[in-house]
Image (cartoon, rainbow, N blue to C red; front, side, top):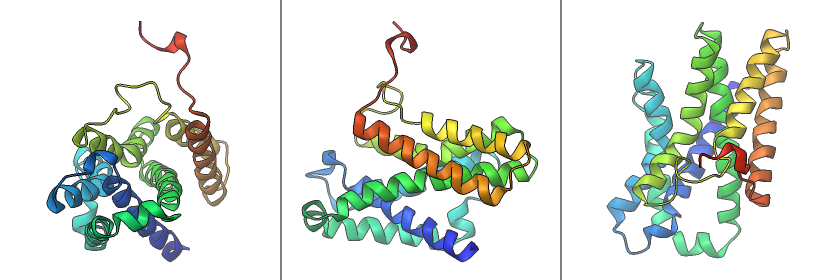
Length: 205
């Protein structure tokens, strides 16, 4: 099971890196800029998390993350036309969504089991899951979760909160984790497909 999760993490890192490379605003940019954007997208959230909780950065602890992100971004640069013309781009979107849910719940579960307060575990799970994408959008000069009304991080927060609730009422982690991951995936895909945004009364006038 641990090996399966690890391999799934790597697949999601590939998707994160490719999502950075696929940003439309990358057209006309040089190879170094595009590869760095893909790398930052893949690893930025987890890096920020480790800095905040004063842990050794995960891609220094396990260099596989570093190289998978770098090579994926590099491959994406040279294969960008083929990716955009094929179903691969849709698969990138799907696995990007799966990655968001996977990292959110894994981090929340791990930190909560280590004795961190629930709000810390949830917040760090959210940062790990979405802040690579936020950094990507800032660098690529695209709207971020801070300047639009898209429900960007809401599914992640709700899924992580539900995980903590289920654990506290005695639900086994092996059941709570995949259930909450699936919930985040479904909510995020629904939000994207239906273009759901915050209602007017929750938007600052």
